[in-house]
Image 1 (tube, rainbow, N blue to C red):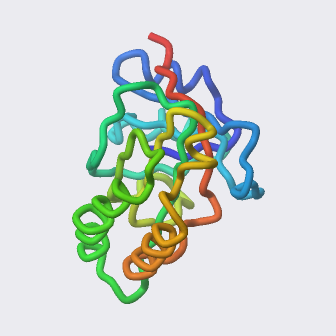
Image 2 (image 1 turned 180 degrees about the vertical axis):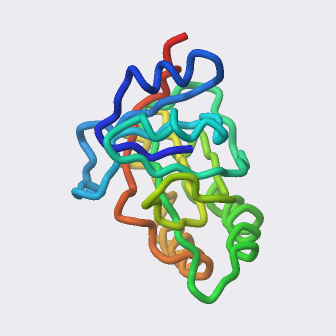
Length: 189
């Protein structure tokens, strides 16, 4: 998995020519999340063994080897997804972070994020590219429509409070790189 700044679509297409590569690009309206640290594309499914190809994806590339968990597989294409680069709370181990996130937080998120249609958790197992920060996870929360994201992210104020209290137990705040992306696009074949 890679976060990319100034993506090179030709390089991404070449990487996708012989394997599954999914690209999701940042949408123009970042709303609350708008800031200069955001990436412009996320590439999912690239072969970690082909690091030179991954590094050619854009001007700056952060790449990780990940293990995927899917608490909810969407049945329809999502118009918008929030991608968050996550760092564990300093008082928790990497294994403790992964266990809490996948076993305790995921069921809570499914209950409280009522507009959530598709939810993928990527636990980082290795950093693959130079200058890539160490992170512990990448969350991808997909919503069918922008209205579902804006208006149905939480079921209630108490739901938001419960989610935020749980997040504080296992992670540092999401990185400033949190980015809203559009629907997935397969790299050219």
